[in-house]
Image (cartoon, rainbow, N blue to C red; front, side, top):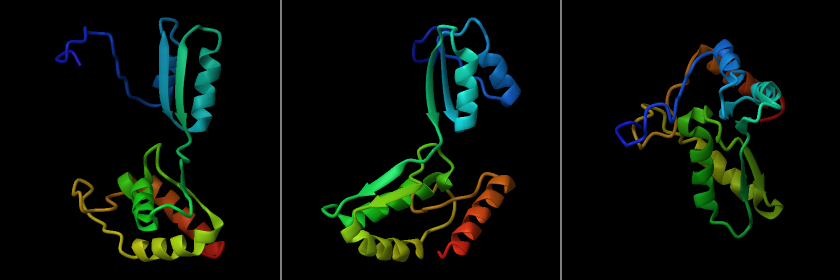
Length: 156
């Protein structure tokens, strides 16, 4: 950012764990807090800075919906769904993790999506021809496996 001409200190990006975040969000010298993450942590930050005068931007939950209407290009919509949820393995705040489909095209969309999912390309996430790369860690893998088991239990 300095190379782009911004003076030092205009933008500061600090990463760390919960203790670091709590310390930073409570600092009296802050004018702005931007947070991307869980709803629970977002609520904590909101409470922590309430009344301080600091501005707050929150992007929480990661439950972005894909909406498909009957007049949509269904093939392109299915590709959009694949990109929305599997790009970055769904481990991003904007992952399209819900799908809302107009009733009269549900069966067609589900059939197309099922066929496309059977051909998910797994590999190096830096390869533009790959749909899904590596999962970030064992904890996330266990979470995903629990979702899959829940889906099977519910009839998937």
